[in-house]
Image: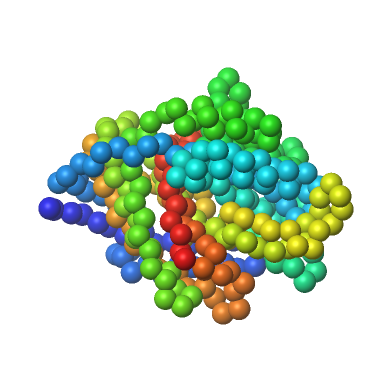
Length: 289
């Protein structure tokens, strides 16, 4: 099989005043012109999985209700068909709504650049909690931010669709170092351009949380987006997206000294999207434990 696998080199844009996120280590060839290759064998199509993203915060009174709604949706459909991420934007990167993400003293800092970049790119809500379902606007509606009460119905709509692209993930962990291989494989011809993103999420983060009954010290946050292995808003896939087109991506990332992230509680999430609209075409995740 003749393969052409060209590299990605990544420099993450950081917002002023935010904590620096160390770059991942990429040992593939440098460049931004990866055109992929045509596989000798074309796999059968995967089922369509849906990405639901909860824009949330620790000082948001109603945010625990949104987290409970996600648990309910995922339990009804399974984690194989609905994948969740919780986004904590920086307080100063968007608007005053995100004062909700200011950490309580002595508790974990969940807000980060990756979350802020996604929210500023996909759509800033007028209040929290809010979120995206497949980063899709559901015409004739033009806004992608959706109220919690609509999430279950919108997820059901998206699960009825098919996907032209398969995603395969393989990982290994040694100490604080993650080695990750991503394969993106097209089972249909596709017109237009796509992009992909690869994220690290963490479960079981205990923090103080504001709720309807006041502040809770032992609240547990799940699906918290902690890091991007590539561009937060997605890296373009180069070349024509024809049946059998395949892209192989290799990443290595080591947690910096003192990082609070616990890899045994983490997952890697890979998303393939329409480049112009951010619509999620397929998503998969893999546990690091």
